[in-house]
Image: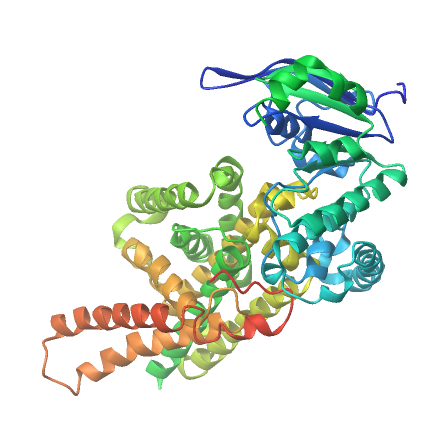
Length: 255
Length: 303
């Protein structure tokens, strides 16, 4: 297995009731880079994204992660292996506190096993303490620590986006997948999130971002894939893609 | 006195039923309209094993709970992925199926005639001692069940179940095998229903298929909604309010002669219906629903 590519999706095909959403699309993510997936509405970005995360099954094609074929693995197993996605519309656990939202994400919890959770109280408690510490670190990093005991449903749209990110970080993902992390948040919060993404990238994590805001993406991404009508129109470093004439007519023209 | 014992015993048994349903519906958001099927399996298993095969009582109860759990496992494995409403419909069908089997497999279940001569716990001590001691046994088992549910609720498992209820795909994205946990909850809840069914059979000492109509499921739902879905003490309060009302109105029948017996039994359900509507309008979280929001980690939005 080569470390050149962390995740590779090859020849992905997907059709919904006859309309082909993805036509033999291939992408590859290099470890430690920020890759952006851009394209106009309905280009198939989210479908490709969900196929990589395991929430949608491709009709054909292969997804490989660290050299292993994961095409048929369910989403939760992929998350356990380090492929963690966030949702475009925040999927917070509304009735749980911000801290509890993060604690749910802790992996391999003794206290979640049944019936073992009933008697291994001490081990559970120790793990809870360790996880709480990790969670508070993440909340501090994202500036959410002050709201740790607040019900998640009372957060603002921007804070919910940050909570999505915080919860994903709780799993210490190798590949962090963000579905429109800037959608629906005020400009200032967007800037904040972008800054966090750059910092997370600098920690050596691999990021895949689906985003509408082209200007923002071009600033942070190392590599850009442009998807139009289910086909890859172009790929390359942001500066190169921006100059590409096909991209300018197909995407920028419409945007 | 025996009547008071029976009211308390039914209150405890409905408490147990509501506790199991609360684990499924209140914590995890699984709507199970076939709950009575698992009560019936528990009741019949224990009755048949102890009466026909002379098993000891405790072994019969354990077998009743185990078989109810065992029956729910393949059902959950096959159908839990259907999600909310569809799963509810399947479970309703399943309970009708169980009832039909009980009614028609005469050699196994004694059919419509039912099973008589089911022993009460401590029956050898005579009627005066056996009733209170049996009641005490039921009370202890109900308390143990409540303790189990409380432990689950306060553990990371309870937190995860509430997260699954709030947003299943988010829990999946965080690496949780949500379908596995839902099957687990279905199995544990069914074991509780099975045990409650076995206790019921040995308290009333006679069971027949008509005691396991969908009414049992819906009474349990009513008890849970009255008490407060998702709260810890709600099932206890709800079950006793329901039983006191159902039984109390029967007692009243002897003293109030304004309505005929038939009218009165119909009136009972009208009043329950009205009470439920009023409750849902003015206090949708149930009698004890408010305590949910006091602690972080409990769901408040769903009830």
